[in-house]
Image (cartoon, rainbow, N blue to C red):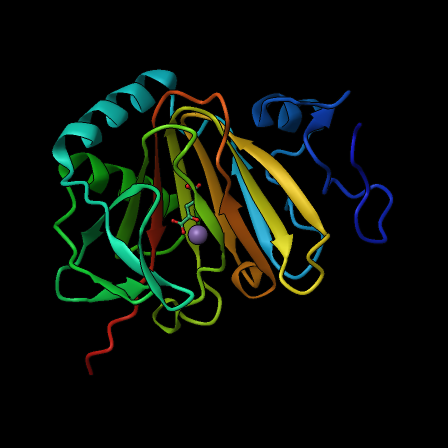
Length: 232
Ligand SMILES: O=C(O)CCC(=O)C(=O)O
Ligand SMILES: [Mn+2]
């Protein structure tokens, strides 16, 4: 069943990329519906999807480089007063002088690798910003995930710009309005894609990467962020 039309604008393109009960690839959806460079959120925030930000060749190269170069760790975090293992592996690259942490953990940044520095340059140009860090997530298979959250830590500023690059297995990513939780959108994030979130998106919308039955292959996600230095 195709879920459609959220908000008051009948023609708004905030639609599930679902046809006849089947999720179609976001790339096909965006192209078929001419949504390139259009804001995917209906109000109170901005999210732009670029299905072919990287070529297949670039994506494969980057996936393999990061898989071997990065020191991936499974961290313990605080959830509902308990310490639990995160259901994924993570790492942080960027300015080692600027600390960053969330969910009760503080992460030490390693310097950008040369491939991440090249990618950052392209994203800086596209987003017209200077990203300071990249948070890296390695989802080993469909059993790994990330729960509902907003990237709204104080150090990200009042309107965070986040450039999210996906590599490897295609996975469903979901947005939902922070106050009206039934206003939801699913997006399949393919390898080589970029999701650019900005404006008020981290204030009014939360997002997650749910577990995905049947996904056996790994996925790497890179979220480039601007972390403001707390030093004077
Ligand atoms: O893996 C994803 O696509 C989402 C990652 C994310 O939301 C985050 O790192 O904050
Ligand atoms: Mn996030």
